[in-house]
Amino acid sequence: MHETDHSYNCAVLTISDRGSRQERADTSGPALVKILDQYGFSLSATALVPDEIDEIQRVIIDWIDQEKIDLIITTGGTGLSPRDITPEATRPILDYEIPGISEAMRMGNISKTIKAILSRGLAGTRQESIIINLPGSAKAASENLLVVINALPHALYKLKGGQQDCGS
Image (cartoon, rainbow, N blue to C red; front, side, top):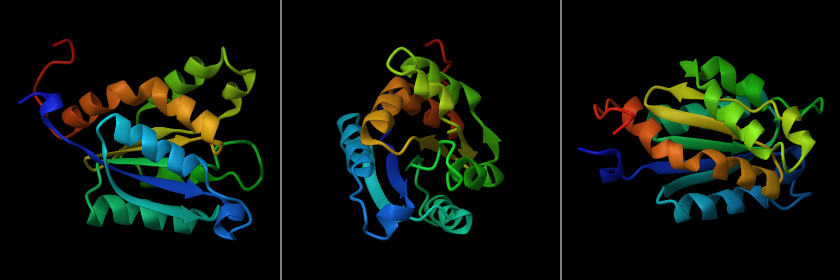
């Protein structure tokens, strides 16, 4: 069995105080859904929550532990504002981090904007799922996802026990 023989499901979680109060339209979530669809991921769920650690964790844990969603993409809450707490919500529920994903996203976008270095988003695993934190703007979230999306099927394949070597 090869990694491309699998179809992986995904979910997108938008994290925004203003969005949760319907003071701002969510543009990053739909932009990410479109990209994930184009790359063959099957959308299982979307949600929008405020910048609250317990709410972020509740949704992610449910999607992984109960719904068995393979890939969770979060958008929002990765900057330096006082309410940006997505990495702090994500880190405690991970089994382990995948620093190369976050590093690649930042480095892959630094030529577009020096502000890429300010993103604190992280990536990691929980059980057999991958969680990736992306910035909140549709442009930045899309650009970051596009840097790493081609590696994700193989990452999920290996996480789920796939035996094919990485160099194959």
